[in-house]
Amino acid sequence: MRFGTDVGIRAVGVWLPETLDTAAQAVEEGRLPPEVAERMGVTALPIATEISAPDMAVRAARIALDRAGWDGGDIDVLVHTWIYHQGHDMWSPPHYIAKLLGAEGCLPLALHQGCDGGGLALQDAALRLTADPAVRRALVTASDRFVLPGIDRWNFQPSMPLGDSGTAILLERSPGADAPFALLAVNTYVAPDLEVLVRGDRPFADMPMQVELPFSVLDSARAGSELLASVAYDHITSLVTSTLQDAGVDADDERLRYVVLPRIGTSGVTALYLPALNDLLDVEYLRFDDLTGHLGCGDWGADLNDLYEGRILAPGDMALLIGAGAGLTWVCALVQAADDSEQGS
Image 1: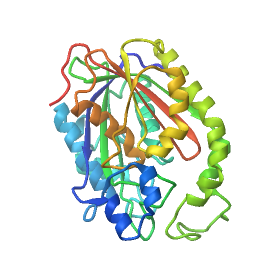
Image 2 (image 1 turned 180 degrees about the horizontal axis):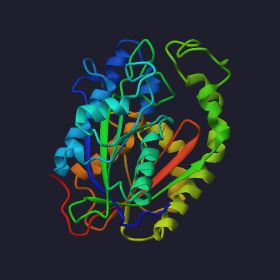
Image 3 (image 1 turned 135 degrees about the vertical axis):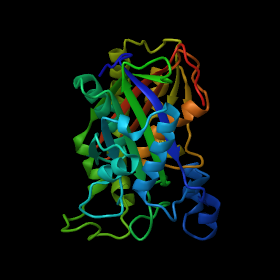
Image 4 (image 1 turned 30 degrees about the vertical axis):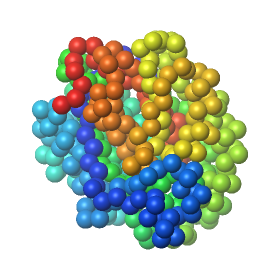
């Protein structure tokens, strides 16, 4: 899906708790097997102790708004996405976020799909910017707080620990020179047969967390690992190829400098992503999960924030962001640093 230079990423923001739970502590206390810690390749996870998930999204959004010089009233659409419990039942977190930001005139939307929610929310916001003349500015937020008794963050999924965060991405139509990135294209590849990787053989329940507490996909993910590995190469190849084609960019374009790998731990990216990417592209890989682990839907905003704060892309350079989520849906986005603006703040 091509957006060209019509949609800009005006600003990004991330809020991470200062408290860290280290892998070394988890191993020492018997909460994490040492061999699993080694496969993860993650040093520590940010832990939210006194703040809700939606409030982390609000803090991230305020950082992004401040960087853009906007206020909440400038937002036309807000898309909020998450994985785990947001603090209340039968409730709309995006309306709460909009209220606290003073975004009273925006349309608050929820996108609850899985870890790919961040990429899909980015795509949804970009589509609204291009399809609706009344929508000129959009906000994408993601937040999660993974806590017991519902979630054991170190042992939720094989070799993929979970960190707490709030992230925010501001997008605008017909961006000016001060937008650090253009969103050139976003594409998806869907494999519904892989929904079983989360469901497993559990019976359907009548209420959340009724069947298993803490909830874990360790067994179902391991049982479906061969199925996932058997299709990952072809699906990722098709996804990356179509994204580049939509943007009109060749795989050997010298402006394509990086692939930002999903924050799913060393073993996950090595087994599922690198085989296809190595055959397709001659670029540098970036991983930002050492002190965060997997941020769920927040990976996308956090990755863009690391590109921004690190001034990693020179003017005109491009980076691919890629990831997947329960369903299973892969998402890939191509961004380009503005030619005539400096990154950083």
